[in-house]
Image 1 (cartoon, rainbow, N blue to C red):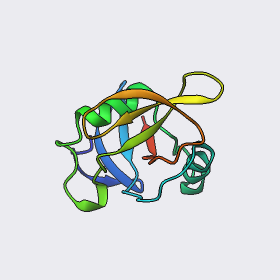
Image 2 (cartoon, helix red, strand yellow):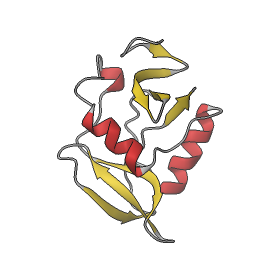
Image 3 (cartoon, rainbow, N blue to C red):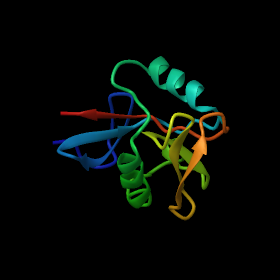
Image 4 (cartoon, rainbow, N blue to C red):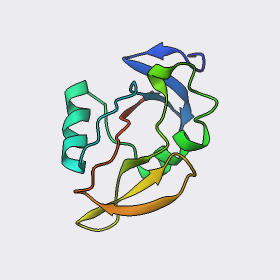
Length: 118
């Protein structure tokens, strides 16, 4: 069992989600559109992905419990999810207030890749 807030597999273990260990990638301050966010996740290696709407909400709910250093901080801004709203837009979540809405995939937003292990 991995201890909460332990660095492992290129990221930080922030808790169990859906019976799997959720690892978040380090903070990356570049705004990207959706396609660039997908490419960024792929550049990190196998298993890294944009979180779903529910996975990102889990990260938001636990953000104050799971960020021991600036390396893993969250900006108080919108983050992409991989959950489509329609062909042109996806669900996004604001990490200041937790607000969930949809934006087009062309918007410049933040991306916090995750991987689920186990």
